[in-house]
Image 1 (cartoon, rainbow, N blue to C red):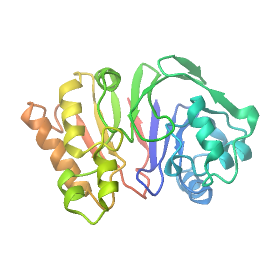
Image 2: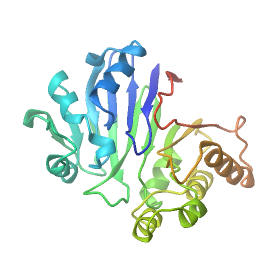
Image 3: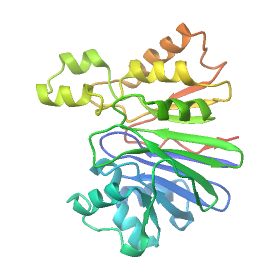
Length: 267
């Protein structure tokens, strides 16, 4: 049985854990190393159960501790060449990934990484590069899409194939437009290479999900431009307008910015 934990989801740090009985995978390592070690200890998960790390992109809230994790626990790190190059340049990553553990992947190709079949795909964002991941294991398709400025055909396809989906619901557009951010930052957030709004998130799910989608987690909520209940209600309302009922047709949950989700079993 697959198990999933979100250790944090937002601009303060992102890290997700996916595991079988004998293999563990981290997606992004943007929490501080001490915080990450504490979370693993609190949940009774051994850090040496993590055999590989996937990175979506090179912004600090997704990579802060990746060098420490790779170095201290001998963990290979998989991402595109552009993202690896961005990690090397990023001053927020004081400990760099050892060269032996730098593993390159390309979008659209499928890789067997431990017990997981992993396919990275393009996600538009204003980083050096950014990918989502389709992860298949034990007959389950798990998909994660974060920091997405817009919904592409690749994203639509991967939503349609997912049984379990982690999808960004970063902001409420009115809160951004009426908030205190300077104009250039508002423009960045709302651009096609910025972040996904609650409304766009809901529409992407409603228009592309299949009957095999069981569970959706909303991720990477802005602390200044969103609220968990607002994100949930917006997405739930859009889904209802398409005849999709939460609790009946699929489950919906908002991931906490700074607190772990608990251990979730994927069946």
